[in-house]
Image (cartoon, rainbow, N blue to C red; front, top):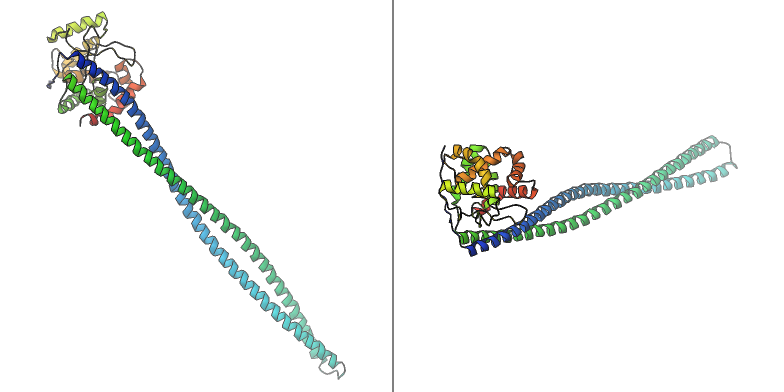
Length: 391
């Protein structure tokens, strides 16, 4: 299977331009660290916002429940007051009946006094009337007592209901206060998110500007469609995810914008790698003295000498040459060729387990050589955001 893409690069770059490009690259690294921190802070703010929103939702639900209970309790209190008022009226009415009855019994007593001076006729009726009145009096006393007891119960119920209403009212006021507090915090958090977005946008703009400066200084660049086609080709051939390959290319060579600013001597390659590097350049017809490779890294221990978009060391490239040749059809394959370079990257990643998303992080770490989690995180970030660099 063969696939070829045109790549434009300069074999010789002005040394001042290289130095300026390296300074820009350092600035980009610092900005990317700041960008990562800003995005992390934004994610934390978003999580905080989600928690506050959830709490507000719960508070609103509780306010609704308490409001219903308060409304029902107030209605119950009104009903209790009405019943209590009715009991009081009933007591007053029964008392009036009892007073009338007592007046009636007093009248009977007067009549009984008058009868004792007269005949015995009518005494039976009198005593019957007196007995009936006495029974009625006792019954009225009992009824009044019962009503008073009921009144006491209703008064107690009224007092308890007033306490319940007061409790619900306090709860509602407390929830309303909490709602206001949470709303203020929510607005503040959204404001912080907006600020983070502004900061992120500013940093991304600076990074884009610096990348443009590097491309201008070094005169290097790949057509966006060519990059996408090369990645698609390598992904199909190896099973490595396209977005992951894009992320790797961003981290390794800024999508091919910067593949190195040092010669083989400046790279501090060991003699074994230098020898292989010379052989690779000879086979391809490149001048090994002028062919640019990566400079020694500043952020971690290691040597330079990495080649092309995939940033392969010469000895590693030599070990994959046959495999690359079988996939691309290029004989010999060229580390500075876009298709060969991306294919080499994909083959190595696939060999280290990147054919599944679960194995990508481990494969990325092995690609750099070591167990650097920061490298894996950086690759995965750009796997999700590389489109920003293609705009």
